[in-house]
Image (cartoon, rainbow, N blue to C red; front, side, top):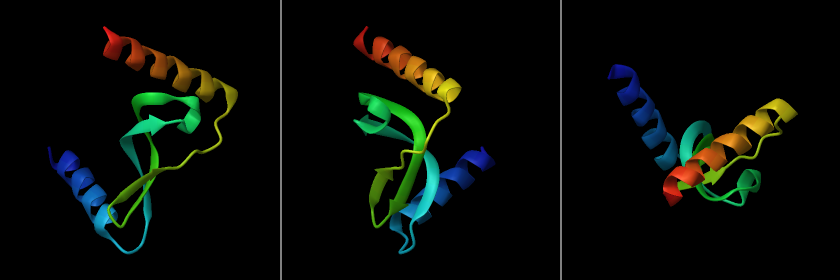
Length: 79
């Protein structure tokens, strides 16, 4: 529980801070990484009340894993 609270506090501080921070968060994708209408854990820049997904280069193995996960999440959401 303490680590979850610490992570939540870091996200809140980053969202409302003047200096952007890049943190892993669950975010709804709208074309990032080639996926739409799916929420995944991705790096995002947080600041000024905004969340902006940061598309980092992925090696082929990680790209396949991300695409498979997005498909699983999408299939569960549709069922």
